[in-house]
Image (cartoon, rainbow, N blue to C red; front, side, top):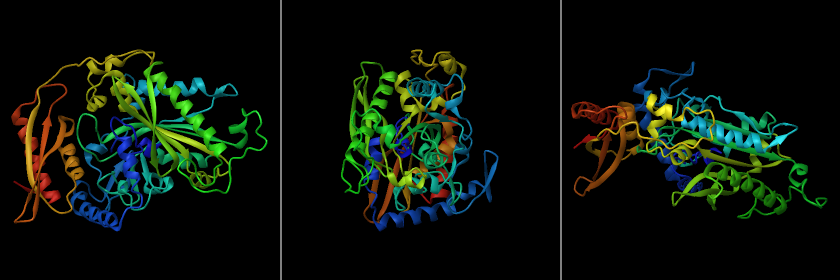
Length: 456
């Protein structure tokens, strides 16, 4: 579920460049003030002059050409990641996790001798803003629409921020039960658990009245819909009977999936949450290595979406989870950059025929860090995500982490200053300080020219 799906990619939140809990907090602010609309305009104007120089008048993605405009903010480094499809790449841990989840649904949901859930794992990540936001009832002024949060090809097309972007389209084709798997893209901070591209699985299941109530002993007077009042535990159009059965079906399914992945003794708890396209909504947390880990978001689908998809006579649930977060925990992988590694020492550890094979990652090597700081005065419309994107584009996977370590306000000049600490580390060799200094200088110069900062 993509904003659900935004949710859970190695610290990214579906759906969502934050955790599920942070997303929940963000979406509670759906009634944002005019100030946020003004910020959106300012951010778009910033990108008009400071992102387009990376391209000419067009950008090519997967063989398709898109005209650039004021909204274009995709970077060459991120563009190079499109089409890698790590979730379908043999010997990649993401592929093993994908297979485990897919097999769970294939083995446990069968109708007429065939799997109930169909799987879509090769859909292009290029979507429209309508698909990514409007179809999911995301408010026009929502912060997730800002150019500082997502990657735009132009004012119409973008790289999907969650696999939920395909939810409505698939429902319109008449599908009732499906899984969508793929790469998603967010502009975000830089550390060992965040990366501009990660992977999600979205699950949707719809029910007719007969399908939902078929196991109820006396279902004669049961109905899916009523003309009621919207409450914290149900939508205004749903009966309480329908909601409770949907909740039971959803939570039982995901409870069993979690035990399949984390073991029969795994401790699981549910936390109330909020998303614009489900109500009520929950997130699941699993206790893993003594800590509660957010693994997915889920909920009862907003009936408005089903009406738009031509399935208004049905009700349904949806969930979204991130593959990187699961893989990092299950295989003890310490750095999200490793998923993109082509090192045989890494890939060979996941070269198994049975995806259920227990694996504990063994470090292929450990090279020293190089640490450089950068300080600069920032303009009023500065966004840290813009700076992170520049660092990513120039330093690529040589950058392990970028952290805001200090802020300063000069009372006389009324100016703000940021200091960022950049940690450089190559995964396969030792970096020299000279190599790092050259990259660092390039980052400084580019930040000054594109973001209007003044290096201190």
